[in-house]
Length: 87
Image (tube, rainbow, N blue to C red; front, side, top):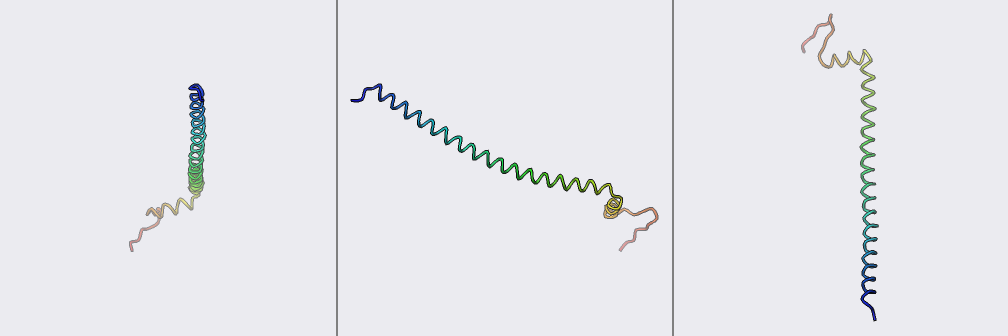
């Protein structure tokens, strides 16, 4: 014969067990979401590092007079003693 106190203790134990299981699963879901976010951020970081490297190369090229002259000519600039011929 079960006494009411034992039923209450069984109910409290079952609720505690269910709560512990819920917390364990919640932490697993959180860890999975954080791992996905970390992978996304690592990919974004790799893209940004590649962009920085490209921009550094462009900045170094801007110090080269021949590169600057090529950029100016592409923009349509001509030298002092040169004539612009129409085609």
